[in-house]
Amino acid sequence: MIYLDMDAFYASVEQRDHPHLRGRPTLVTHKTDDPYASNRGAVIAVSYEARRRGIRGPSSVLEVKRRLGPDAAFVRSDFEKYLAICRQIYRICEHYGPTEAASVDEFYLEVADPRGRFGFELFAAAELKRRVHEELDLPASVGVGYSKRSAKVAAESVKPRGLAEAKSPEHFVEQFGREPVTVVQGIANPLARHLATLGIYTIADLARADPLPLVKKFGVNGWSLSRAGRGHGGGKLEPGFKRRRVRSVGHSLTMRGVSDVTQIERALLGLADGVAKRLRRQHRSGRAVTTWINFDRKFSKLGRASAPQPVVLAEPIYRLACRTLHRYEHLADRYPVTGLGISISGLSTGIQLSFGGDRELRLAFACDEIERRFGKSAVKRSALKDWRRDFQAAPGTEVG
Ligand SMILES: [Mg+2]
Image (cartoon, rainbow, N blue to C red; front, side, top):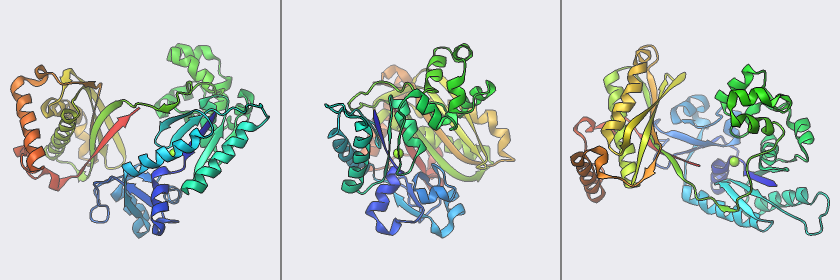
C-alpha cells in the first residue's frame, strides 16, 4: 500500500501560483475574508514557514498578525482550484495502480509488479513523488506500508518531502515506536488521555499493551487500538473518489473579547440564523446542536444538546446554543468571549413541514426566497439589523 499526502496543500498551491509568497509564512484564509482590511476572519491553512514560526494549525487572522506582524502573507482560498489539482494528482496516481482519494490531498494506492521484484513498491513510491513534483510543482510525502495505517504513519513521520517504508509490524514498531499515539489517525487528545491512564503514551506502548484492558475500557474499539499499535488497520482500499457525506454544517466567528451576555446572545442568534439558512438551502435537517465558546483565546467550552425533533429553523438552534452559553456565561467576566461557533450534526435529508410549525417554516422559506431574489440585506431579523457589521461569520462544513 502506498500513501501520498501533499505537504501543506493549500498553502503550497498558493505559493506555487504566487511567487511573491514563496519563502514567506503564508496563511490561507476563507474566501470571504479580507485579512488585509480587517482582523476578523479565519486562517484555514498554513505553510511550513508559518508552522516554524509557531502557527501550527487553523487560527484567526488577528492571532496570526499578533505573532508574525508584517511578515504574515495572507491569501484567500480557492477550493475549486484545489479540487482541480486533486484530480490531476489522482490521475498521476492511477497510472501506478488502483487509487483511492481519501481527501482532497491524500491518496492511497496499491501497486503490484507483475514480475514480483523485490522493493518494487518503494521504487514506485519514489517515482510517484518525483512525478507529482515535476508535473505539478508541489511537495508531497509518501509512505509505503502493509496496511493503510502503516503507510500513513510512515508518511506522517517524514513530512515534509519525505519517503518512508514500514515493511512489517516489527519494522513499524522499531521505526515509529517512539512517536506519540496521536500520530495514529483516529487517536485524538481525549482518547490519548485515556490511554495515558493505562500507561500508554507511544506507539511502542500501544503495541506492547495487553489488549484485554483496552477491550474492557473501550469495547470493540479496544481490539482495533491494539492492532493500530502494530500498524494494522485503516480499512481496505476503496478505489475512486469517495462520495462524501456531509456530517455537520456550522458557522463560527471570532470577536474582540466580549463580556456582555446580551451581545454574545445576539451573535449566537446570527450564527443560528446562518446555519439554519444553510440547512434549508441544502434541504437538510439536523438534530444535535454543538456550541463552541472560546474564552480570551485561552480555553474553549463545548456544549452539545439534541432537539427532540429535527430542526431547520433558527429559533430552536438558538435556544439550544443559549443553554450552553448560560452554563458558562459566568466565565465571560474574567475571560471575555473571543470566539463562537454553532454546528449541527445528526443530519438527514429532506424537510418536513411539521418540523418547525407550519407557519414559521413557511415564513422562513419565504424570507429565503426574498433574499435569493433581492440580496442579503432585503430581509433581516430586527434583532440582527446591523449584525453583519459587528461580526463576520465563516461557514464550515465537515465531511467524512
Ligand atoms: Mg496534507
